[in-house]
Length: 60
Image (tube, rainbow, N blue to C red):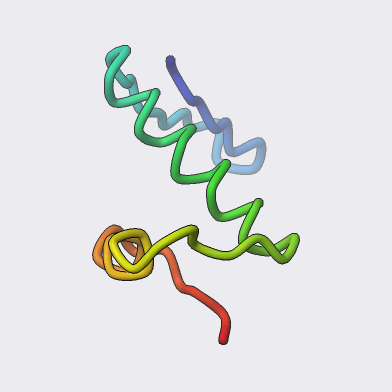
């Protein structure tokens, strides 16, 4: 997976290239964050502890 941003004003390009496993991790984190924003909650105590450790904030 590659992500590229083109700055039209400066005519510069920047980007990142993710391997398959890195892309999966990024996609999963985004997907879980979206579910949490929609009102989903962690299923068990392990998930309640694991999500914040991965940078995903749990609303109370």
